[in-house]
Length: 344
Image (cartoon, rainbow, N blue to C red):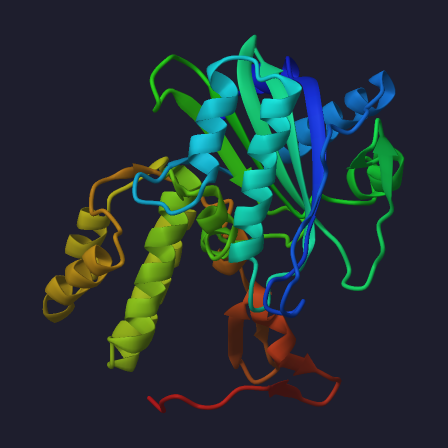
């Protein structure tokens, strides 16, 4: 993971923007609008950009990632090339243009068009690269300027998209080289503008473009185990009593003050015999390890909380806090807007 020390020493060196439309919506002959030289960024803008990146990459929405050896993306090779040694301007521009064209090819279907921003940085004295995809409304016109006969997007045009406190980055990733080997990198990716509540949301598109996979950390591992277990309880467990007991046990164990969680122990202590083997198989299918892990429920905290109502006739209604809107309470009645799954 990118460390706080690296973020604290972040230095902005080169910046460039490319306008990347949605390939499937723009029609035949469409293509990215590529800058031909770097964007001129003054000292004030570099400071503001450094603060923005520190806030975003250091947020809870950032997840540690690593290069995927079987990825088809051009990004890993270009990141490695740009951080081997300080790239000259021509090399930097050409490399970022390749990444913008790759983004264009992957940016299809419902993926929003956007501006790809590539930044050469240094962190803790080590070479690094930041990629940002900034949302741009379709139809919005961005003016190119020319310097020495070559086109570029000026920072003044894009400053509101990047540097204001009211605008969040659409997607971002930061890579820092830590050694001479190809695998010597620390990296993190996030999708802060979409307010990602699960690491899986990010994986749908951004990771494919980055050519990366997640490195499991406690909150990711915890979330994966919870999601896979809830899926199993919902779709495999048929006995209503067992279903309720497993929900209660899962919530109780994840909310406990213990700092570690063992899937194997949970299965042995709380899962009835007839469901133990199927649950193990289900977790393995979902690539969830049975080994113990450090527990961190920050990604599923709202899903673990429940809101309860007790009526005048001692009827108890309890729902997950993130679904509390299905209950309507008036002076004379309580209405649950849901269907009955089973009568017990």
